[in-house]
Amino acid sequence: MMFSPAIVEMRMACFGTSMDSLPGFLLTASSLFARLARTTKRRAAAILLLGLIGSLVAGCGTIPDTSQLIRMDVLQLEHPRFVGPHGSLTHEQGQRIITRIQRNQETPTDILERHISFEQAISNVPLTVGNRVTLLKNAAATYPAMLAAIHSARDNINLEMYILSDGQIGQMMANALIERAHHGVRVNVIYDSLGSLQTPGSFFDNLRSNGIAVVAFNPLSPFRARHWSLTQLTRRDHRKLLIIDGRVAFTGGINISEVYASGLRSEAGNTPPSYWRDTDVEVQGPAAAEFQKIFASDWYREGGLPLDKHRYFPRVPAQGKQIVRVIASDPEQFPLIYVDMISAVVNSETNVYITDAYFAPDRQMRHALAQAARRGVDVRLLLPSQSDEPFIVSAQRSHYRGLLKAGVKVYEWSGKMLHAKTATIDGVWSTVGTSNLDWWSIARDREVNAVVLGHEFGDQMNLMFKNDLEDSQPIDLAQWKHRSLLERLKERLAELIQPLL
Image (cartoon, rainbow, N blue to C red):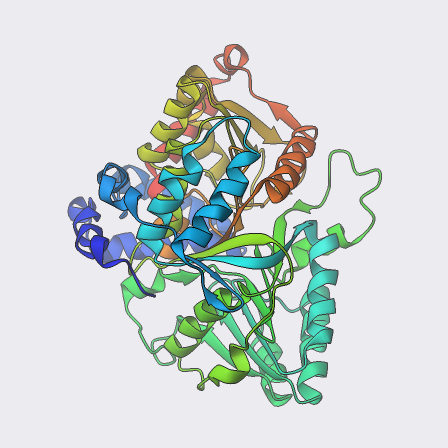
């Protein structure tokens, strides 16, 4: 990934660590065990271990100091770079695009000035015009759209998943990929070896025997890994990508997993929802090439065979009018998505609507949210009331008091599991992707988000968010103060071990 030269030195300087109080191997082992709790049935052992070492590892992890970057005016003077089906646009053409968006703004916002310039500086990724972006709510919309795209493939399919399971959903996807491979389509698959730990090797062997190229990201076995180390074990590929012919791309929170099976049935009468709530996007147009670059980087890292540039990066005509920037985070380099999100909150003027599955951010994000609320921004958080990860709900609740006192509105999803990772700010800057606001996502996982500029998509995001609030419960500060002593103790413990969550 290319980075803006102006911030290379700053990025190195911004990273700090508080690992001195704990041997590195202990942090690595305990962190890995925490993630194993998400993907195996040995949760009781994981919970016991986390409880024993929680007080020792408080503050461990590596998260950048964003305030230094956000205060650098030079980064907010960077001209946003726009590209389209025929190449780069001039600065004047880019300014006309921004002006058109600003005309629809009831309240001026720094998102369209300072923030997208800052975003350009830290990511060095262009804003791509000429796309059609479809918002996909839950498995009932996402899986059929993915399958339709797979069946339409004529040359190549690239799939990258944290969890690729063997079951009804996994077999459905596998059969679709195999069918295309039998028709001469080149199919490449990356799966995370930890996220897909419960998937039997026979599942992947079946893909390979049918002509599909498969690689595992960061294999747990030192005999299979290209980059094995104790530290590398905690570096996971949490990205979810599907790219068809270099022209269509999907990303979001949905894995290929059996937990979404109930969501494929009719949603009528499910109150509160009994299915997993998640969000993806389908991007058709030139921006698909940016997703393809991310896949190719991960593919080569794990020893995948060369991908022919002309096949995988075709010239794609405009498919719509949406403006998209694709941002990837790599913990070995810099958590771009997290820094980008904080900057967007800092520059907000009217509203910040965030839906997050694993909300355990550091002080910087909490401060940005609280400050935005204090200056009159409508800040709302939609968070889970139950989770597949031990302690994460208690960790998020440990921050409620400070956020509520600042004026942040907090809601908890009433349904089975909230797994979406979305945000919309000032009705014009929206993001959907794989990243959460927890330490794993910020400091240890590879992630990818699609940022979409414009009111049309922003209105869809706001409507989806407000509809979700109808299936949620608001948290009232006065009532929150009367929660039980046991709940307070659980929150305190979770806060201590938050860097492992």
